[in-house]
Length: 45
Image (cartoon, rainbow, N blue to C red; front, side, top):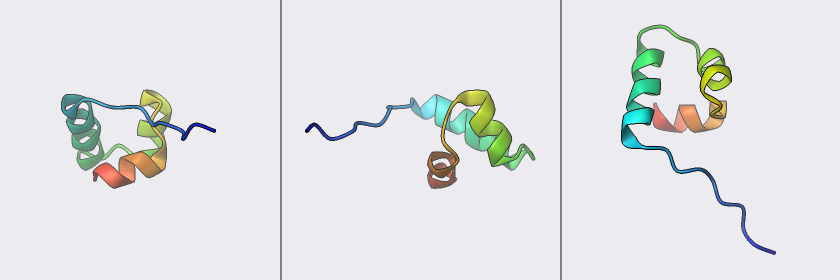
């Protein structure tokens, strides 16, 4: 069996999501809007 590979996100994309989080957008909303799991977003912040 092959290991599951995660998506690679650009640094700019990560920065955008983190900046939105710091400006008050919830992780849940960011996850829904950008298609990134909440766990991944928490790792970035």
